[in-house]
Image (cartoon, rainbow, N blue to C red; front, side, top):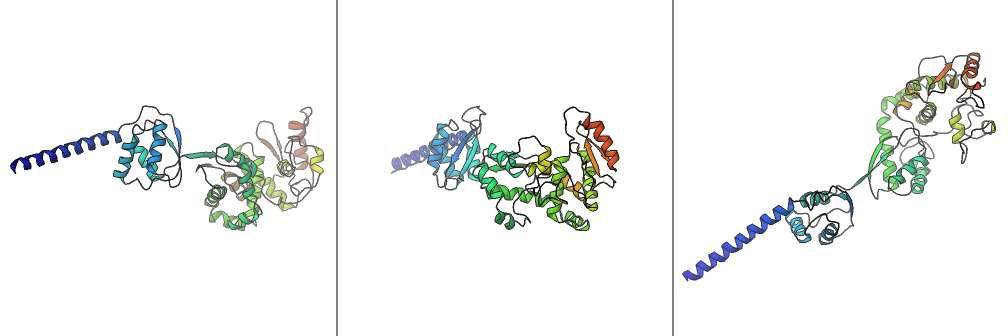
Length: 347
């Protein structure tokens, strides 16, 4: 009996020692990277994919050293039934525990999309596609869907002008709706209640403010000139003068080849502000915060004209005669050139 008890104790001690050794080995594994490599590898976890399959994929990509130990670690940490689907950017220099926690928490790889001010819907869609986030055609089509615009409270037939310029991070597989909604939410966060009140005070709707801001954005070379450019447009609108701004004409030309001609300026389109009076029917690009602020708070100036000085800035004039002198000075003397951004007509 005594011998049997001693044998049992020996077995228990041996099993305990083996278990302790296995635990220490697993703990060492969990905290030891597969290699020093910092090269990021894209790993896709499909919905419902078991931990065993994920472990094999990680092993094949050199991100872990033992699929079996990874599965055991996942079970101990409680992640064996809840690895999140998605695309992940992982490195062999990460520990298996780090990798497991990233997969368990769904910290998927994010793609950066940077949208500068002044882009059209099509240019925004192209930027999204270039970042690896789906089809430009799908993005552009959804952004031009009147029903989708209405569902987000946009008072227009498309989202032109309302996709706020910023840097965004999206996971692969993000739907066009999710991408566009994020950009619209950013717009709403910038266009504050105070700005809505200011728009009402100066007699403009939200859509008119965004439309005017988009023109200011496209006309601005030097940021400091935005309020002055805004004042020119506000003054002309109050006088019933045509805006006569090239960017709106260009926006209304299908497949514009970069050469704006006199014929273009004389051809009626909804966006040809050399022909129509007032604002065009909608924005021509996405304005940034500063352009929208300039549209709402123009400089207090009596300017009605401006012309490019060919250095990124403009000469502003109060009278047609002064403007014509500036045109002669800055534009006409440039051989073969057409006056750029030139308000050359009387009302």
